[in-house]
Length: 357
Image 1 (cartoon, one colour):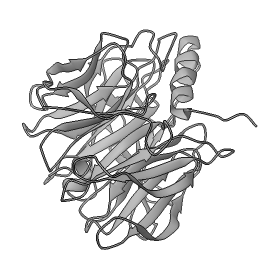
Image 2 (tube, helix red, strand yellow):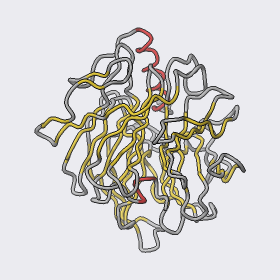
Image 3 (cartoon, one colour):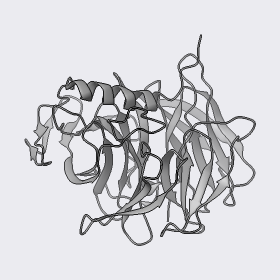
Image 4 (cartoon, rainbow, N blue to C red):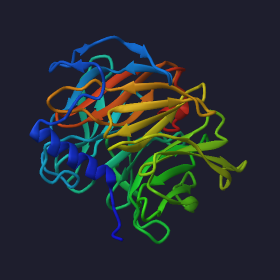
């Protein structure tokens, strides 16, 4: 059977095509007007937790033109929100065309967007700041490279050149432990070809080792509050995996499917954790985020109100600003790229921002 690659890419292509035909339906009982003003209540009760309606915070990118991930253009796919040392929100535009901004910075006080880096070749899928050197680290979904740069965009360079451990992966999300050791997901694979991996590097991005493999697209990766385990979103399977780690975090001592969910047309994209140990799992293609506690109870569903007749179904990633309960979500689709916001169930910690200090 042929290998199915890059379901995230197919989601972006599918949403672009559907949006062009004006066929996207609502995914919640509320909607947002064309200027981004949300209509409807903030939350409502359900049998399985409550529904939280995210609010549009800022439109940050227009509709992207043709690129590697969307050859015909017509859709925008943002990723990797992370607060930098200056307190501002950085993110990447995975579907940016060659020469358009690939890394951007949002001033959360003024809502001003500033381009930080661009190039003609990369397809950036994540961005996270290291507690070891304060640099931003980014992954390239299509060539398996890992890049680094200063927060102002200077000194952009390749920190790890693919292939990694004998294979060019689809390197996606990043998390750091307190010492700055580097953990990354390889979202390659499908239900029919389970080759996804979780890979660990030391803080110098040397000595890679595979912590887990045989996955149907490892994507989200977040440490528990005490750094004793990892939560991994398995993109193509709708599984939230729980990996218990050895004391030095160099191996997995136990593994289980912690939670499962119906993913519909979407997939388990990026995830994060809060101070209470709650797990926030983005469903790209479905316009929502599922929130469980650490024992698997569904506490809430965060929904992205839709701007019709186009869509904002690509809810890909989020960061909870450390020390606050304010969460910021990267959202894309046929209307362009947005940052949405909602109040998390507990405060953000280092792991809420990708393992940065």
